[in-house]
Length: 436
Image 1 (cartoon, one colour):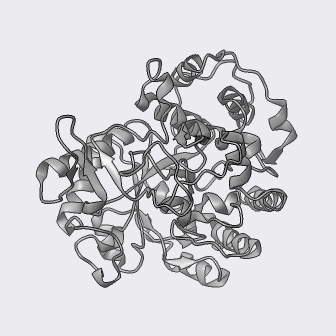
Image 2: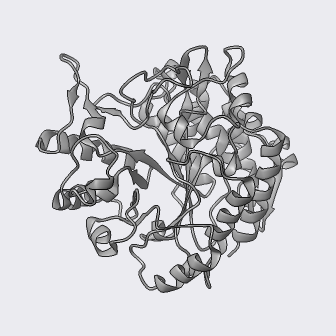
């Protein structure tokens, strides 16, 4: 129902037809299908209706739905699915529509990219993490020059969702929340889990007010804590099942000499309460909470309520990762994972090194049930242009458009024919893994 409502809001017919372009760019492993050997502009420049046709064309089912189904459920991998998942973070702000200096509709661009995300395997899930859902503190809804900061790491609560992401021109026909729900329904139909990134450093969070200036967040203020919990619960109730927590390693003032965030962090027991409340209030036992660098003191991070965490071990050493998967195989509710790359990736890795890390993430185990979680960025599937990188696009929001149009931005944001060849090689790796 929500997807049809989105199509209506975009003045598109809800009657769906098989998409020939999708079939011409098909990667297939058994009944699992996705689009590969592409560069993102080929998807991002299509209509949302084309993306929905494509998603239904890729269905693992044995019939073509002429209208998108009204009831979509998240793929069922059990309560502890997050322990073995592949997390793929999509910078939905970077792929938003850039019209001159304005930035918007990142959720529609994310929908358009979904056909090119490999679906989940038999034994483990693939999960798309959106980099931005909340407004960023400075410059939300605008792009800025490539050397001017416009960070995703500073957010506003109590202000709805980001102008970079939401299509406000159709809000009279479909709400902000329904736009996220449509994305989640389409992702779930693709066989994907979904999640979002958030921050916990107090000085990186503002609380918006209608009648007074924005207020700096405080973990000592019970009303602020309630707001943080309720904003998270609201997103879970829209269909998300994962939350990536930035600076999570330092909760309770742990290892603060390496802390690079800004402001105070929640306490240990406070965090236990917060995570438990998110799960309790949303009535979801499946929520995966992922911590940045929650990777060494296993008991600490498990008791906080994390499912997995980054920066445990990178994918350069296949044998080392395989050994860790064997050592941890009996720990089913928490184990840190394998980094292919993270949000701090400053570029510079060769395609060969990225391919090797993905190969390790997908295959370094004795049995599929032993698999560790893994963490990838958009750049690991769709290489960026030579003079930018993942971290730069988290810190800044440049338009690479030569003529002020979205098409030119999308065309110039990513690598071109070498990126296409790389994407095809990644598709081949996933094709071997999806039936395990």
